[in-house]
Amino acid sequence: MKNLNLIFKVFIAAGILFFSVSQPEASSYSSIKQTAMTKKTNTSDKMKTAEPIRVTFAGDTMMDWSIKTTINKKGADYPFSQVKSEVLKSDIAVANLESAVTTRTEKESKQYTFKSDPKSLAGLKNAGFDIVSLANNHSMDYKKAGLTDTLNNLKKYNLTFIGAGVNSKAAYAAHTQIVKGKRIKFLAFSRVLPTTLWIAGFNRAGLATGYDLKLMQTRIKEERKTADYLFVYIHWGKEKSKIPEAFQRDWARKMIDSGADGIIGSHPHVLQGFEYYKGKPIAYSLGNFLFPDYVRGDAAQTGLYHIDIQNNAITTSFTPYFIAKDQIIAQSLQTRKMVWSKLQAISYGVKIQNGKIVKK
Image (cartoon, rainbow, N blue to C red; front, side, top):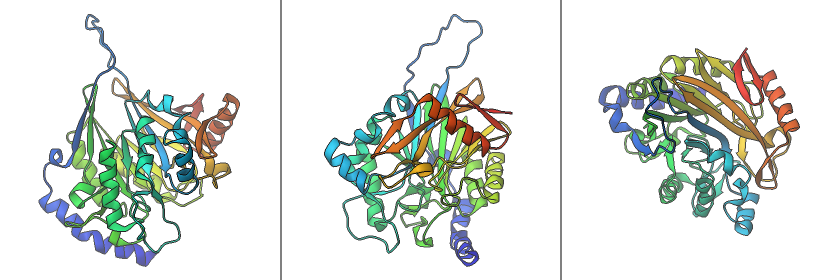
């Protein structure tokens, strides 16, 4: 692993030089989307209260294997039918798309490769998701051609992507969305990659690496200059572990010190705990959000992580769901309470009260 990390550091050195020497203004990096205001304000109020903004995050999502079969039988909306109403209440919803979206057959030589049908994206879109992170260890399972197909298919379904692109400039770009007058930015990185060849280069399609903290800090600092809020979605950690590694807690704090307003993690395929640092939220792993019917127990426990913004204050909450028979299903209040209790036990300095995550 030490040799692999050394290879990654040497490989991305050129990328760091590119960003530090020839980096354009942050505004030219970012894609911008204006979200319409749906609520009315009372302009006669002497003391105006800013409208609340909700940003929702979900974990690892893929529509292959049994899910592909189920979608062919029941439609792309079926897996999300029980979670859709809650997602649609959010101003922005983000998921980690852990799959290539292509019909190609040539794939990487690795233990697991995931490929979703293009039509499956309709389910994500109809459920209320706006953005997907492609910074993970499966987006390029069907090589560069498969990644290109994925990017094109996401565009067809009007789903924004972060953490990947046709070159390093695109892969490391932040997506900017203007919501109720606030500029909210999103960056994505992956610290789980099977080879350095997956890292985007000056003229090479690929992903945004999460192996270099300084590079991530540089991107965060640049984008924060023109953002009201900036959130980082990062693929990292140890699979099946409910506890983040020591470096993750350290890196999360350093990214927040660099300007991030929240760190959201994925990859372990199980839920991990929550934390606040300087008032900024950290969710170390959101686990699986939609995975095939082989997932059981902790790997099937999922949920929606909400970040609520109002009057410059950030609060968070978590709504548990469960994956069963290729569908994200609602859970009873009694079961949700059990999930919250377990999550509180593995979190850091927080209490979870009816889903609301608050500092002790």
